Amino acid sequence: MRVVLLTQYFPPEPTQLYGELAVGLRELGHDVVVVTGFPNWPSGRIYPGYRNRLRQWDEHAGVPVLRLLTFADHSKSRFRRVLNLFSLASSFALLGPWLVRRPSCVHVVQLATLCASARLVGGLWRVPHTLEIQDLWPETLHSTGMVASRRALAVVGRLCDATYRWASAIRVISPGFRENLIGKGVPPSKIEVIENWVDTDFYRPEPPDPALAERLGMAGRFNVLYAGNLGLMQGLGTLLDAAALLRDRPDIQICLAGDGVEREALRRRAESEGLRNVRFLGSFPTSEMNPVYALADALLVHLRRDPLAAITIPHKVQSYLAVGKPIVCALEGDPRAIVEQAAAGLACPPEDPEAMAQAIRRLADLPEADRRAMGARGRAAAQRRFDRTTQIAKVERMIRRTAEG
Image 1 (spheres, helix red, strand yellow):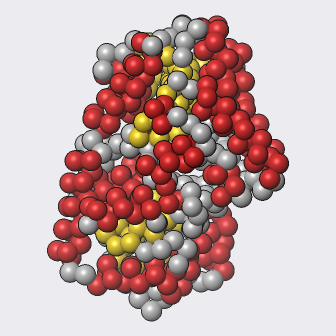
Image 2: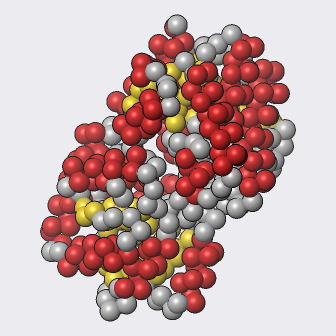
Image 3: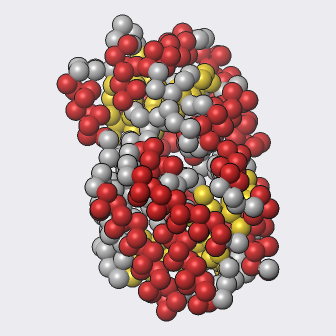
């Protein structure tokens, strides 16, 4: 089977999941080609070593990657973000049929714009396409504040409804996503719940590096680490509020690693409020994150209080479990259930700085052996429930059934 994996984001962007999917499908014996844009997420700037151009062939772990002209942007400008989202879809519609050999199936990762393009090009090729939903639209656009207009959200909603009709099969990452789509009229038989996986050989416990701890300013403190996108949906102002409530605990430090549209605003606020217990570590390639995780005493995940957040499972939940650290889970619903079922940390409501500060205090005051046990249970859950080989095989079966008709 020949598969085109069409995705807006792909490594070296911090989207290891998509790279693993491409490699996993190839390891299962399929001919895989990735079509994506030039790497620019989450900063909105083209990565060093790349130059935006009409097309460029690349390679990822033996998988050919076709990068097409993309309007690079991840700002708060609605107009520029729309250009960003439509640029890759337009490039694929215009260039895909000429640059890529006819596949058995096109597998689209997210984005209604890409689905419209896959329908057009797939129609020319006379092949079906499958859809993978990592974020629900238009709910995400509304929750992040990127789109406030009811009319615009309605237009996006109609486009998304059309993509659900067009796709031959749809993968969702949580039971809540499935119920959401069924409520929109999508036939249950078309939807498969396949949770995201984690590579537990890549994300693994390792001893801390004292020299790195000194360099990052993490030596001698109880470090609570948030790692990932510093964006609007993450609501990271709550972390700063919690830090303010922890001023009486100079042994506790909240660290943020990553990039995103809110980074500078958060940094300025921490400086203006004199939050010396907050440290911005900068952004690290995925390949360099394990040593940073090793310096943390606890890992924190947070999303804004929103019905969407209760059914969204950030991939960092699986990554956190795999590195064997206790988790402060400031979420509700599906993601909170994962952490609680694994007994891998402490949960608290989102956007509640007092509850977050209290959970952090409790973890800091636990015996180290108890924290290690939490981390070990999380690691075991990652290996048991989110095994990479098992989960990718489920995606492969969905694509193969679609391709075979």
